[in-house]
Image 1 (cartoon, rainbow, N blue to C red):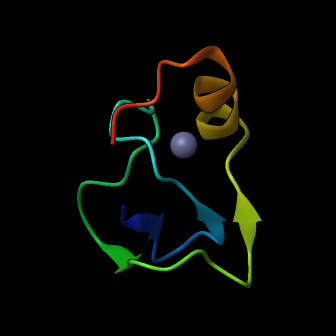
Image 2 (image 1 turned 30 degrees about the vertical axis):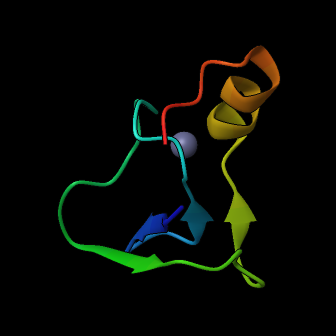
Amino acid sequence: MPYRRKRSSDTWHWCRNCSNWPTSDFVEQSSKPTTGELDNECQAKVAAGSCSR
Ligand SMILES: [Zn+2]
């Protein structure tokens, strides 16, 4: 499950259906990020069971 963030942001996303899922100019890594922020919307999707990975 990849994590992505915009190059200009330190907020990580991991749900492809997040409205802020980066599609260009992003950094991607496969392990859980140890720096930066985890996106609130992605976390809400996980809690609601609607996170598409
Ligand atoms: Zn997100």
